[in-house]
Structure formats: C-alpha cells, structure tokens
Image (tube, rainbow, N blue to C red; front, top):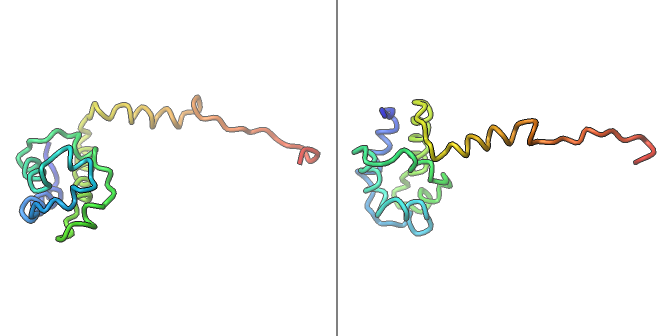
Length: 123
C-alpha cells in the first residue's frame, strides 16, 4: 500500500515528536490495545508493520489531541490512513459486515415506511 505524502508526513510528525507521555492513552481503549505509546505505533506504521484494520479501530473522538501537551492530531492521522486505504480500494475483510449492514439497512426490504393516509374524521 502506498500512502499519500500527507499521510506519511502526519505519521512522521507523530513518530518524531511524541514524547511518550501516555496522556492520550489514559482514556483510549484503542491506543491501549494497539501500542505502548503513539510514537511506537506510528513508527510501526512507517515501517509497514501494522495491519490495515488498525486505523478503523479508532473512534476519531479527538480526545487524544485534547489531552496531548503537543496537540498531536492522532485522530486526523488515523482518518488520513483510512482515506488512503479506501482510495486504494484496499479490501478489509474485517469490515465486510459493516458494508453489508450499510447496504441492507437502507434497502426497501429492511426499511418500512408507513404511508397510510388519514381522513379528517380520524384526527
């Protein structure tokens, strides 16, 4: 997978700037599950040592940026990685159920609309 220069720059900034203070990890189950600290996570990303599912596990809530003393935008980096993967049409088997849900939840078969009419006497 070839990521955009914007995505690579964002990842490099985090990998080079993060002080590993772990403030962002306190309330983030995603970061707790995937890394020891964001610096390590983005270094692994740059070394192409991460599965494509990882950026889709971030909720993009932005809490990490709010508590980061350097205001590093991890959520924006994860979103950029997602966007690059989608542009490349990188198939994520783990997300197939989400795709199916999106298709079915808007189909006429699974969405009902009551189109009944009321007469004036029923009001």
